Length: 117
Ligand SMILES: [Zn+2]
Image (cartoon, rainbow, N blue to C red; front, side):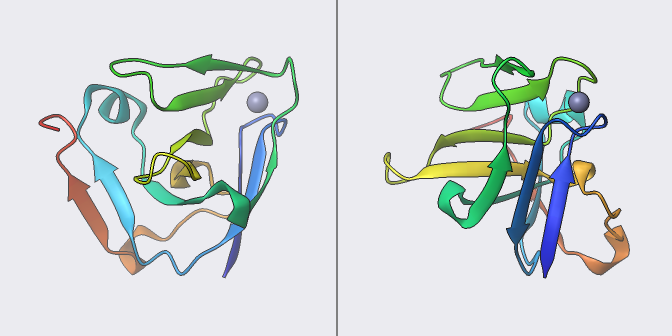
């Protein structure tokens, strides 16, 4: 199915196709505070709108993930990092920012122990 995620004011957007087979809830200090539900895919499989000047970027720990968030509304619909191969740009999409709300009873949420990773 095709999905779109965006920040609350609509400046940051991403559209993508997925089966939503894998929805991850991570317990690391950052994901926990932001309440993320994530799915991952190569950036090349998405269409992204990330206007220069509209966003800020937060990094922490090993600084491998660029956590983008909207300067106006504060929402963080996605982050970008290198994939497991160290080359492919990978997007972590925050399913809490889906434009059509996700029915949580229809997805299998996988707990990831990022706090211990
Ligand atoms: Zn916004």
